[in-house]
Image (tube, rainbow, N blue to C red; front, side):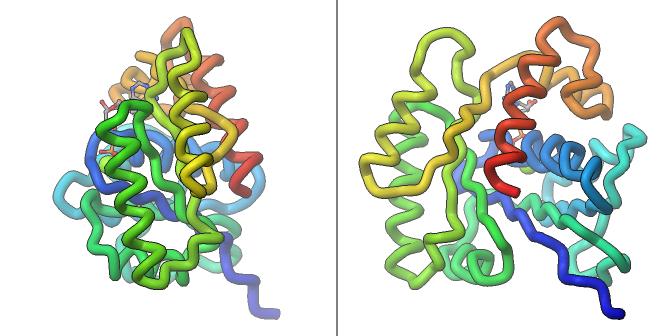
Length: 202
Ligand SMILES: Nc1ncnc2c1ncn2[C@@H]1O[C@H](COP(=O)(O)OP(=O)(O)O)[C@@H](O)[C@H]1O
Ligand SMILES: [Mg+2]
């Protein structure tokens, strides 16, 4: 019997440094508990998530772009290059099941994301699959929630979960672990955000 196609989660953003690779690795780690999970690092220039997997021993299969998918794959996470062309993003909305667009909760990024998504809609992207996720939000106060609500008011789908800014995420990258296993006092808080997002998108 041929195995079913994997559920594909792609991450993309107009700017670099918003937390795409951080989310890609941790989301893949959370999904790997449910079934065989692979991660494609399509950011050829930087290769953050590939390097992360190489440093650690995570239960995530690293794949190259275009490489044949292993049999029985249940989830495929795609960490794309920053500053995508609108046409490439539009293609992603066809090939992936969900396209996550991480955005930090400041006016520069919120405006840039709103512009990007506006262009994507005009280019015929399947907006049903696109979800903004607010990242690097201050753990105290409601700046993240406010940015989420502003983008929702502008008509975009935005994940309920706000990913908070914790040093644990940086530690996890350094240590080649998932954030839940990072040696850091806030690793559990950071992981609870990842689990919330995982439930929402898959
Ligand atoms: N939620 C977060 N809290 C704290 N630091 C974060 C968070 N997400 C990402 N970072 C840090 O921000 C930097 C860029 O993150 P990265 O995931 O590589 O972004 P991108 O893939 O979008 O370029 C890294 O130093 C990373 O550790
Ligand atoms: Mg990256």
